[in-house]
Image (cartoon, rainbow, N blue to C red; front, top):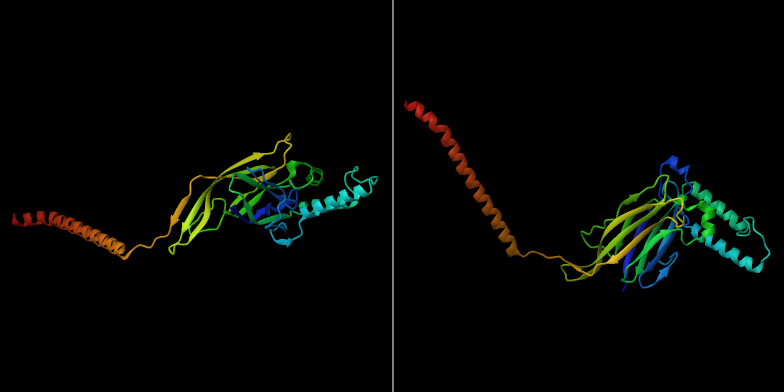
Length: 295
């Protein structure tokens, strides 16, 4: 069975300040979700149980049209036309046709307007170490270069609203929930190193909920001028060999009586001590007065 990873309402490239929205060309409209594990399984631009919604500069949903899908469709269409018309020349030096050029302009305009993307859904993986990441790796490298004009212009700012590995049980705390990382005038690679601990939660009625807890360590590597890689947000996970069992228990009536007797006994002992102290205090205060009267 695979470890169920729920990515719910993860906002990549959310709303930023107004003056930043006017300057940046970055965005999340061409994101892809990729996954790879130690068994050799590698999936690029996952679309099964993973959804991406376009957001405006205020974080409001403006449609379900995925510009990443649009880019790939345009590029695939161009490749098909190129095979049928090998002598056709493009306006971009033989790389793209007019339709692709127009599409790239539309994407760049959307990014200039501060649009972002919300990624959410469920990802099933095998019980081996691996990672999933959000990036522009699903794009053709030449298309990405034309859109962003270099990897340093890809803004990987993000907010993680909810990230869990399996169903939730009462009292669970996922350390990445509510994480907010906003970059200004820079870019880079975020890496979240996650240690997953298999957990069994046993309810009072004996039902067992198999799930997982996790701890996380965060690392950020800023982009440099000579870097040939592209910015991304990585979630690198590994499984602990230890399983934790959490049980719900209802305390017996005898336990309640025992605790009640302990509370009553402590109260009685405390009042006895206070009574003795007050008696000695009053005795110390009244004795000197009695001696002065006898004199």
